[in-house]
Image 1 (tube, rainbow, N blue to C red):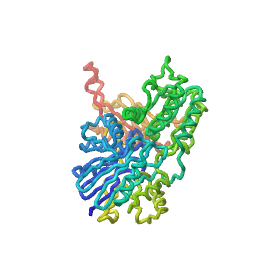
Image 2 (cartoon, rainbow, N blue to C red; image 1 turned 90 degrees about the vertical axis):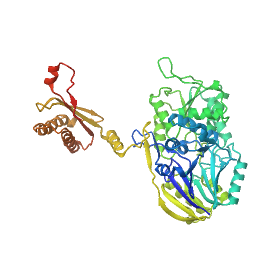
Image 3 (cartoon, helix red, strand yellow; image 1 turned 90 degrees about the horizontal axis):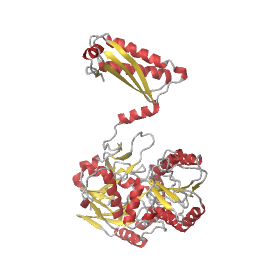
Image 4 (spheres, helix red, strand yellow; image 1 turned 45 degrees about the vertical axis):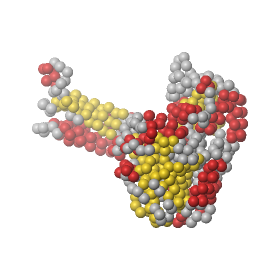
Length: 574
């Protein structure tokens, strides 16, 4: 018998940055290590990853990182973990190919033997614990579920999956694997919950193909498709139809281009190289408006909408929408991107009315729906169910689904990030503690967490702007020799408050008088008082709180004239 802990460092009660730890006695198995995209109020933040301090403090116990598939919400944080220590990373050939590209982009050094490819037949042994993989249907090639065999039974992590009969995976092998796990006993099922509220049936490849063929054959002019980067099968379908119609193809989106390149190299996509077109930047001689062109706009979550918005506004460097273009929306909004999707459609309609938004019944989400979750539960018959990959509402919806197939609430374990769910001798004994968890915000290539102070300043800059007030001070004569000059950014005076600028200068001079009448100038207090007095005045007058930066420059004009040089004696008082 074993002591087993389940810990989510990310991925529960949220959508993204999936990272789950299974502790079997003293061994830690890391399942996925993802990232997520920032919300609009996180100004300047590029990506959010998990606080991995718990793993860093227990690196000697970590057996490896086991990856399910190549979406960023499952592999986007691997770079940051490998920066701390070299670890074995296990995943399919396709997943590792995409990961290599990401590691290179993030400038993370790694040894090739650290990335170990696995198949659905792979069994990795770590003492009395065995890790196996099983193929699942998703919208990326070589997507796996992960099974950890312990003395108390299997812990099954499905990751994202569905039972889409249009997919090309070997379901017979998948069901044989699941049957073996069920026969040997499943202690806990970690199943995705994003689609637990979804009862829609899935469309068919044939119907989709007929619809797209009719569209491409009957449409004149340039056609622009929006697709998610993970929809490799759908990218292949669009390319096949476009090629059959004699059209050229341009794929936009660096991440997707890398995924497509990896898929072609590994044989998952079959697109002749001579059918691709590399678009050049728009200029007076090049407009990229070839009527025979099919442009596939791709990305993850919000990215296709963002690119379409740029095209509609005319700010994209490769494609500028015009009234003759046809735009085909094949991107059903992800959770949290619904507003952006609606705004994108509105912007496009300002440019062209030729918009085809494909029905959700033909473009099903790649996540398991209610009936597919029931099917997975009924096949495996786990002792306990732990909903993962989803916000709380999805976890709760999955608990209702589990109730429908006979599971009482005491066998459905809804966790929060950081909770330690403990099992002893094959029985759940409760939440026995918590570990550090949270979000690390990454800005550009600064791999350190962006502090709350920086984020607060960015929020103030975005909401209320900035005021820079500068003056030259002669410390010998105790006089303001130049200024003050007021520069504003993102802060506009209304016509009713035209005297604010004058009043601010008066406040500056009054504060200056107090500090310049002393024997020694305390520059730090001088600036602080200017900032405080101006802040109080501006908030009282117009209820705004801009960032105020006083810049005081120590300047002795007589010395400058005497030396007849550049002001070598002028020093900043900041």
